[in-house]
Amino acid sequence: MPALLHTCYRIGDIDRSVAFYGALGFEELRRVPIGSDATNVFLGLPGDGARLELTYNHGVDGYEIGSGYGHIAVSAGDLDATLEALAAQGITPEKPPYSVREGGSRLCFVRDPDGYRIELIETTG
Image 1 (cartoon, rainbow, N blue to C red):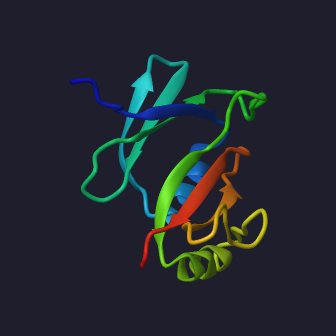
Image 2 (image 1 turned 90 degrees about the vertical axis):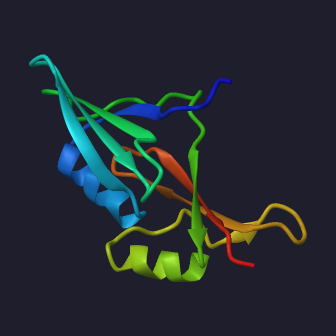
């Protein structure tokens, strides 16, 4: 049976991106050099394996995201507590938390250092 293994996108600074995703609860699992041209950094949430692959191409400090990229979504538990912890690290939401429909989960979006959108979805009942 097929399974989604990971998502990959390109970044402009490894340390900056690892710190951002660390603030969201991701752990760096490994770095893999790709010859002398690039480094792949694999991140995962505790106990879940490498679900996010960040590729740093040496000498490239930024990318155009383009109109096709949407976002990745991450569960946030208590969204208010998560946003408070992120704010202490200088990470702020695009707008305050909201629900798409009546009775739906609260959510909001933050952007990583390269401008990729990350949806935080509250999972507490």
